[in-house]
Length: 338
Image (tube, rainbow, N blue to C red; front, side):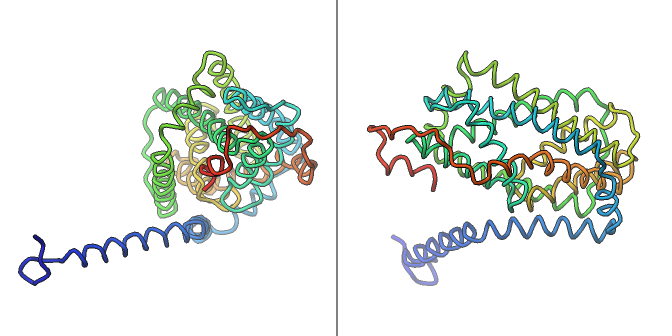
């Protein structure tokens, strides 16, 4: 029996109080996490500003020209069509109706909201919830968007592994900004791990239907590959516009890793880890950290321009309405959105 004297250590009451204190601390971290994430992204940008100065940022803004803007809109159209089509494939695999004519405007709108709002994922949240509500199954609507984005990341990781393994290793020495980026990645991945662990069974069942079926997998893989190629093409445009004349083979491994870093939701409208990584990677590769930062700034501007058609659909009301399914109670539908 545990006794509450000094000889036998803590009592059961002490243990209970400690547990409550830990739970309260976890709840506080969850409440503060959105703000901590923004502060971390701002810290990355501030570290870059202190280390490299404002010149690289200004040079990036000045480097953007009409040709690069047109290229951004064209590449953005291709990648958006691929993403919207991938979303349709996944949603239909989960039994949710979604036409390409509906998916493309919604996808463009989500990209614009991702680019102009903090965290960089709020547009996808809106897209998921809106589609789930229209289809009468909020849980599957959210999972369809999560799977669609996840599929793109899996293909990107596969491409990155192939590219990196084919290259000689780089000595990417971490400077302070890059160290903050690594911390952001670790924190972001830890948050995702906790989310998926709670819903593993449901997620796996839907993943087999929406991603891994014979009908869905080839289309998703092909569309994701084309989309990754489009994002890489936009990075190459940004590099050339910013004045980097290094050969494509030298830039490719840096850019595929940069795309992975961009997926971490620790940013301010997409800005933060991307700039830190490209500055550190260009510096380590002998291309100049300032050139890397300028390239990242140009890419950020071009990515925003590529999403601007979403403004045409920002206040558009979608006419695709589906009756709510009788076998999906509201309490079950709302469970995943918490």
